[in-house]
Length: 429
Ligand SMILES: [Zn+2]
Image (spheres, protein in one colour):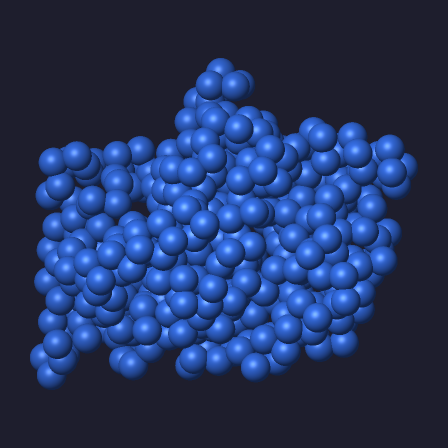
């Protein structure tokens, strides 16, 4: 496959753009980037890239895909009330079949908005794996566990067994990771067990961390330490593998220093933190301190979209408003958070860039769209003007998932119908 005559935001070197080039894809890999004027192969399928921006697929480093069924349910509440009064009771009624359809709905939104890779923390992960395989996207699947819902440790065993079966499966498109949901849904004994299991099977760890002020205050009262200091003491950040802390809203200088030293990536969820009135993570400070910062959408119930354009826009605008400094987060930095930094968070150096030898995870954005033309400067065009409606074509692992806005791997009508059916059954019970 040859994407011909396209402007490329590579994310391979800082702010690098290659104009009018062609991208030759062989199998799942970008074989060559052919500069304007060099001879082109003619024995391959041609995709016309004229008037398009090619960029790496977005990496959404924190989400809960099947929570699409709770979209527009339990709104305008704080995290604790939303989670314990609305989300957890509804999730108790989930089935494997329902999770399959709810996840597929998320994947439709992902593909249509250019997300090719995501980190999903949920349960019934075999259903998610089946849906990921069919959808053609890339995923890190975490069978999320918590002490309050796992008195006999069976769910941790299930999570560990899922990791051993699915990590690096599906031609490498599926990875897995362990993780305790949060410090406020597990006691210390349980979190220690999760760390021990991760060390035993060679898994990294993900978790929700420092999301609300209440989490910090309760932790200091109970453990005489901030959540980061507490998890560090337990060894949570000493495992070998990907380490992702979702949210990182309320953090001391020492907390940030620990994350930087222990190579823990932050997954920032701007919309979710704003909607649940949790606060605003200090992304500029995290970056300055050397933490790898990436972006997540969180679940559809606290956002209520799964769209990285929304997250990038907030990340680019909010800090300008807070600091009155227009240079504090430029478009190029924000675009890296949503692509290359996400790849770094999941320790996958084959994605997050458009470069020779990288996996072919490529999004084409139509610059003739009325909402983004003219695209005088490419990265700002993507961050400040583009939206999901401007995504024209999506390729993941060398396979076409959407072409000229036509979804190729998922039946949209069938999925929406099933999601509405199962959501109604669950929420009316
Ligand atoms: Zn979350």
